[in-house]
Length: 116
Image (tube, rainbow, N blue to C red):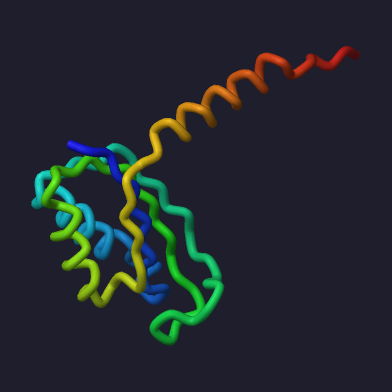
């Protein structure tokens, strides 16, 4: 299985009951043989431009593992979903993540302590 990043822009009217559309996306991932590693709700944000007559959307980020044939199936289902305004499904940049974590760790070590 390969690791992917999925960002879903959910219709802003569904913000009150965000679990319903997210459950559909989670089920879509798991029924296609994938697993969800982590999930973050980034909240409602203003879009850069109007999408499907909407100025806002609820952003949800997921780290997922998928088999080789699953991304196409998930993309096909998300394209016709009424709840999802837009999505992006990309392979995870594991080298970039590792470099970022190392940079954060080295910055934390080099940070001088304050004296009172």
